Length: 135
View 1: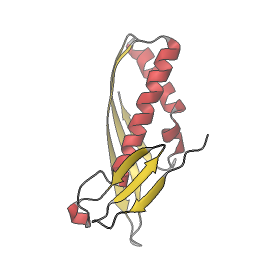
View 2: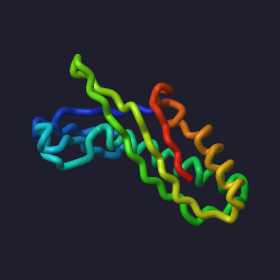
View 3: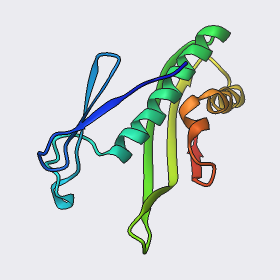
View 4: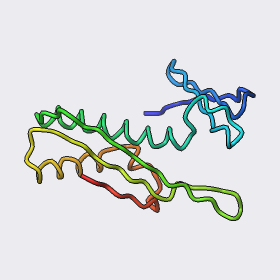
């Protein structure tokens, strides 16, 4: 399966519009980075994509296994490091899980581990990123 995204510079601050499958997305940067703070920045979308993929994967896996998943909330923080050559990279991602289900505690942790193995976005990110998972 291939996904295609088209993006265009808006020439307003740092704003960029993107379109995929008929959906419009706006990117921007904070005012301190010469943006207009009209939308999340690309790193925030990256973290949101991770959260979205983990949650959708959990929903699908719970349905497949007959698990009653009543809550699957994530709070994710990413640390971006800037280098002397002015490049930057997300070097650490911390995901805090707040999950309620009909599984026993140990089974629930195993379920979350299975979600991590199956999540496309998580699997696609650089393996050099340091991850911290809190259950």
